[in-house]
Amino acid sequence: MHRFLTDAIEFMPILLLGVKNTILVTLGSLVLSTVLGMLWALMRVSGIRALAALAVVLVNVIRGIPIIVQLFYIYFVLPDFGITLSALQAAIIGLGIAYSAYQSENFRAGIEAIERGQIEAAHSIGMGWTLTMRRVVLPQAIRIMLPPYGNIMIMMLKDSSQASTITVGELALQGKLIASSTFKNTTVFTLVAALYLVMSVPLMVLVSWLERRFGRK
Amino acid sequence: MIELSGVHKSFGAHHVIRGFAATIAKGEVVCVIGPSGSGKSTILRCINGLEGYDRGDIRVDGTRVDRDHRSIRTVRMQVAMVFQRFNLFPHRTALENVVEGPIFVKKEPRADAIRRGRALLARVGLADKERAYPGALSGGQQQRVAIARALAMQPKAILFDEPTSSLDPELVGEVLAVMRSLAEEGMTMLVVTHEMGFAKEVADRVLFLDDGVIAEEGRARDLLTNPRNPRTQDFLRRVLHPM
Image (tube, rainbow over all chains, first blue to last red; front, side, top):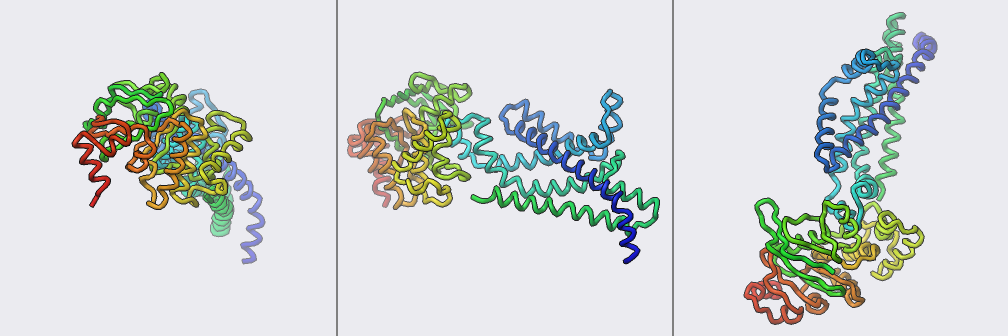
């Protein structure tokens, strides 16, 4: 136990550097996936056939390609087309796009769960599509979207470890580097696992706060 | 005020409205009665563009109702609608429901809209409920809030789509009382209803709709007490004496 603690203290600065990158990747891709996901969902329910079809194609293409391949594509293939991104940028964009498909399906389910009568009532007082969405549909849909959204956030935190495959020094990669140079696998990976757990707790608290905030009638 | 001529409407193979024609004058109260499936609600929904129609012409104050044209929003602001299931916004209080249209659609100053909204809630007898959410109100109270929400748009006419049909019997009266007071103040109203008492007392005219066409129309008292068409006679007999 004593050994574990001294090792832990020694490794912690390197792991915390990884934590910082994990947080950056997670938050960045969370914001991007939320914005894109909402965009795809709104296209899908826009009632404009071409936009809806485009959204369906985008979501299915994104869903059908493994995240790791999307990351490789953005980091290793785009430079061939003159777009060079840092590993961190590529990770945020790649995970953001990959998760936008899941976000979009969740948002769409929330929007479509709102009763037809609500939309008719909004129309009957002269609201157009945008106002109906903003004032009537989305505020009610958020309550439905939140629990799955919380799930997606936690999955994204964990999937940020995939950024290690394109050289982002996030928590999993930092851990692997220390482990392979010290052979202290037990110590290192126990710490890595504990740090992921510690990071997911605030997310869980945030979700339950959001549910209470938007859930009250 | 509202003119319909030769209106046809199908849902798939089901031809619901088969050449509906009627004119509702300013200040007139017209009740539409008829068996379920006769197209009563559909006609109402066509007038403010919640449904499209296939043929014919619907005009509100001379403007053609076309749900795919931007003008539909103006039409909807002029012709408010009260729904069978109230359709209040559950995430907003009674007062917020009422001022939603004035503030966000008509862009009225918030303070003015709220002042008017409170007056409207008082007018439908719910001054003390402005902070209540729809879920905490009875059906009758919800429908009165919905009427206040419709009035808040200062419409030229109000369409009522079976406004009391989903209410418990003891709550029907409070909603009808509000509607009667509106009628007395000269509001143009088109009311789809099964409340024959209300139709007889309040309506100027009654249209009996059967199978998508007007089978009989006339002054309320005449048509309801002395129907000529055998279909009307049969319908009224069954409504008034269900046993």
